[in-house]
Length: 115
Image (cartoon, rainbow, N blue to C red; front, side, top):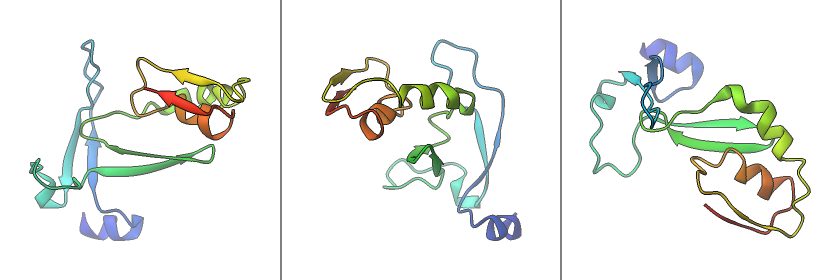
């Protein structure tokens, strides 16, 4: 696994199981490398499972063991980037990692987000 991580320039490898079917739809990533990622010590400032995903000029950063990234929403995030939000203040009650609110800030010209 260390060789695979080196080739991918990765600091964490995990296996994604189906998303939990509960109301909260929690991530079911199982860390497999490095060994110290299993289990994670919550007192560590930056958990080893933090990943960066670049899409539409936005870099999303998340701990994949605690949050899920829905790659299937890409077209919706791009659509939100084209909303006429110039100068608007946006309130997003279910922002999560900012799928839509970041697109509104970066591309659609919103001035502030409450999430």
